[in-house]
Image (cartoon, helix red, strand yellow):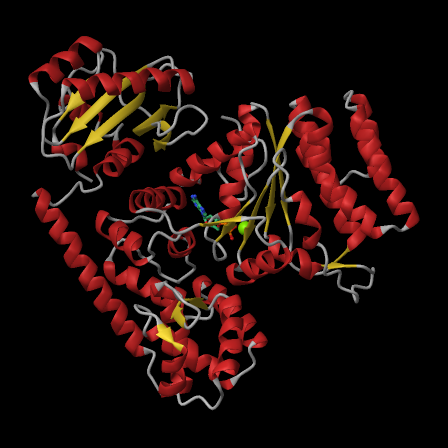
Length: 584
Ligand SMILES: Nc1ncnc2c1ncn2[C@@H]1O[C@H](COP(=O)(O)OP(=O)(O)O)[C@@H](O)[C@H]1O
Ligand SMILES: [Mg+2]
């Protein structure tokens, strides 16, 4: 697949997982054509992967070119004059639309250097004359200083264009909560325009151009949507990555950044981060001097740095939330409340309990107001009823917060947090060892990644050995240099759930690429049916990645049934059960 819109994640291969969300939202986008999709708000704290997801949805939808036109716009924090905002918003739409219709991706990069005038000429050149009317009505509103009209026209441009042309558009607006806090009526940025989002009352009801908005300030966005756009949005909460995806991400980033991990530390990272892509990347990319995350001790130190040191990215990100909250809830009790909830984060706490335990000098209504503001600032959460509250359900936040404030409140030592980390890791380690024990081997819990490493780093050097422990390789086969050795997971544009464990593409065309399957946690032998299923995948991969010379490869820890071996021989698939493949 081609990636048209440049993704901020960097190399598109780094994007990992999100299978469930991609499936859900790609179907949601398909369903727009049947007018079934209702505007939806994706909620998750900062850096949970909303932008990564939306940009990928944009690219897949653009690539599929199947009747729904993607539009993506991110609202930035900080002040902007309404006119500048409207023009940028509008031109972004016009150029993304033109890029889609003409399939000329250059247009995706045109906004900054362009103007309404240029856009008009380009629309004419492309034969998209109907855009010219819209552009002219924008010019007209500008000339007369009709700012409300201006916003109405540009806001409705996607919907109205879809309507005129009998088309469907998905409007993705990232960081929607900033809409009412960044746009000013005047150039000097003194007069905030607070009715920006309200304009979406009817726009958001459109079934031909529904909205997919996101928000990092979950409490704030929910409040905005409930107050200003009641019943217009469904909420979708984006959580961390599920375990398998988190593991994949750890290995991918580790290899990409050249920061080694072991199977054990990879396991520990996925558990301690609870699958948060931000925490995972912050640990792997940490600037901690002398970082070594291939040992538990080094990992603990890196995590301590990230969460306890001012230069840690995790700490600074959380402190932005916290300071924003305390600005709004300027109160000496706020810290105690957050601390109390965070210490009791495994349960909900009532207002009554807070009043009593913290000896708060205020009445219930005052406390409620305070708590509401803290919920809106995302540093506590509403519990199951209006009376109940709980701490942010995130292990690491609690530690960051306590390290900063617990001392101030309770004369507590940061050392305690370090001890806690060590305890947590010791527990996790026990769990990992137990898992290993269940499978009765020391190595290879994540066998596919060890095999990928083998191909990436050692295959040429160990050519003779690896060939001798693998059956049925072609006579002229040699291990070679591979430009990428990744797992190939879930490529939504081809088929739901399509994935292969190993994909190593030979750098030189004359050499064999490898597509492989790894079975290591299954206690039964690889069956003939599984060989057939793999053969189908292999065919598909040849097609998708246009591979001429490729070998199918199966590693199965428990070996192969007789029929499976026969089938491998018949189909020319290489196979092995030799654990030396996992030696590093
Ligand atoms: N699915 C993913 N695969 C790999 N990395 C991811 C993924 N989602 C997020 N990340 C990492 O986390 C960072 C923050 O993600 P981003 O999409 O910018 O979060 P948000 O928009 O929610 O603030 C990205 O730069 C990237 O490094
Ligand atoms: Mg974002």
